[in-house]
Length: 141
Image (cartoon, rainbow, N blue to C red; front, side):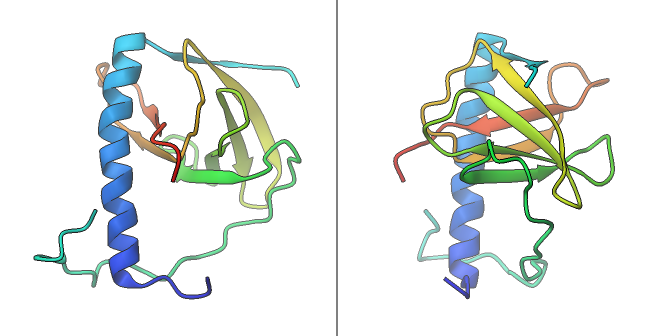
């Protein structure tokens, strides 16, 4: 899949937004917390896509525990730091890495289950002094 069409990008954004909404409710309800570890686009209307850029490769991940990165988001607090997670088959773990693909840590999300995590986003939450990561467990795509 060398080219991703504009409609496909928009569909992915819409799906991630839906997943994010469901995940926000799930996480707020469950009060999940990350702790360090050791080791459908409507055919009737298509939004303007002039604000989207072509995809950019950030890095080759060096952490072999990330077997199938299924979502990625830039840190809101640490420039050059990114968050990712595995697709299905892993536990509730978030992996941090830098622009060279070097691992910067692994966090277990306590109180959460990872059936088939597909997307991740960063944004505001209930405490306006903190930044939050949201994971979409929409699975079986």
